[in-house]
Image (cartoon, rainbow, N blue to C red; front, side, top):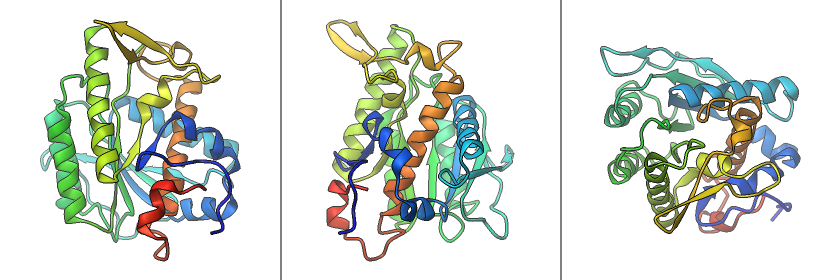
Length: 273
């Protein structure tokens, strides 16, 4: 009980472009829960755009968008994020710019950051890694298997999956990105994982019109050109859009059993905030 209309979470906990509009009217109780969350985010350049978007939203309305960011160093020698501070602060996204090694190294860095550096509860509630659009060759089966193993090892920490950002191109690499994303969506829908469907948010214009292209008779998503100035990285409009999506994901976690012990696991797939 006590739910209000908006932010309908369908297909397990997949959060996509359909959930963005409801963020502006999130009830204060959920906003307060979001303001208690602590995150780790490992990323590269588009991730930097997302962090800028969070800062934009916080500057526009700090009460409704309480998350702030704090940079965490990358230890190249240990191949992981530096250890968490002695005390982690609520309402903080600890962001580690780990650069752009090959995709398999990104998986290893994230795993090392969680297991060896200690980025899990009690230090943070939620952890997230993101590939970039330069990773079209990434293997979805390997990536989701690594995440699933982490979820099993640290069941009280929220592991947020992400789709791979798209480009405005209509080339073979954007086809590969779409294929990777479809595999990740299927995994999340079938395992009840939380998915931040970044690519889907990129692939609809502000009016909700899908941005697609055809290749070998199949339809694929592409980045809306109004969200980018170079075909891949996000401009102010694009970064604020996907940062709004971050709050949609955070709202799901705010009602997750990890945060609300009295919330029934069996009802989360149909939860409405």
